[in-house]
Amino acid sequence: MWTLICPVSAVRIDRNVVRLNGFITTLCLAGYVYTRSPWIIVPVGLDYALRASSRAPTSPMTRFAQAVASMVGLPYRAMDQAPKVFASRIGVCFALGGALAHFVAPTVAPWLAGTLAVFTTLESVFDLCVGCVVYTYVTLPLLGARASAEAAVAEALKQRGPNRDTI
Image (cartoon, rainbow, N blue to C red; front, side):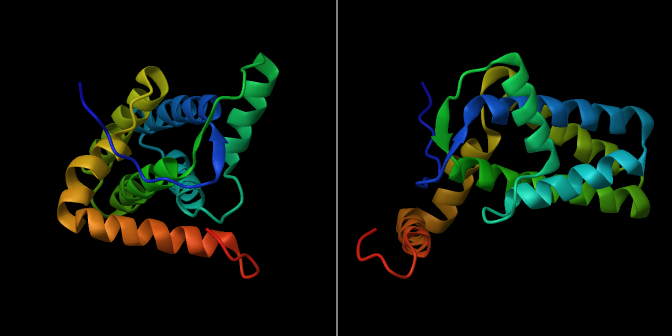
């Protein structure tokens, strides 16, 4: 069995909302691949940009997923926010790359959107985070465990605030 190593943080988010968000994103991306409308891919890219910033307010798609989860009555399933922020940073490259390619290289844009749709489908249906796969098999081997540990300590120090003495 595979063992995936994901970034860690003290901030917790709802796994069910993440999976719903992935499903909503998949539908939007499939809509873009079908219609090639910039009115779909550009907002998806901007939404990913909000998600990729761990300090940004919640994205519109996340708010919608939270509302749907609440309406349906899905239970809260806590998970670390860091893996999703890392995955969103990968997603923003694909989404904004697709939005840019829509205007510069229109034949490339549906491929970028389609690839991201596969990633979001894996997240929403199988709870498989491609960001964690990339982190485990690409980021850690390239940067090494030491760089990863230093980044984790720096993030923990940043999150603790100015008046706390411990991590």
